[in-house]
Length: 130
Image 1 (spheres, rainbow, N blue to C red):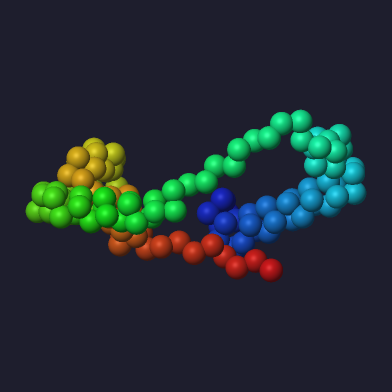
Image 2 (cartoon, one colour; image 1 turned 60 degrees about the horizontal axis):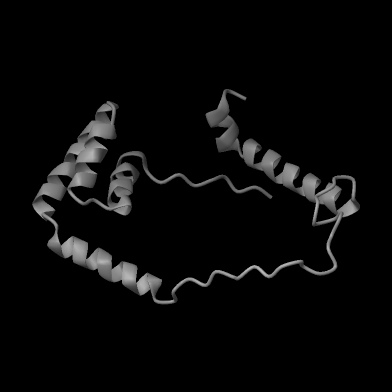
């Protein structure tokens, strides 16, 4: 196929993965493959009650406010320099880790560092498989 990159680009890897999932589900459903607690050895009644974790419904708003405060309070000039350096290092194909650490110390977000790489490499879209 020309290597893994070509296998991914052609959709072969994704088709193989999908086919393996479908085959596994078929075997579990037919009983050919045993999954304890799913298709064999199921309990009629749970012997104990497990509390369901319920996250704070305000969590997204809390995180958004924290992010807004961070962006307002950080040194945005220092951040811009660090992100510029990250882009330069990425384009030079050097080790990006020191530049990433510099950007993080300048309070760069995951999205901001990822955007640098999207600019350099473009976003990857998986092939469509049917």
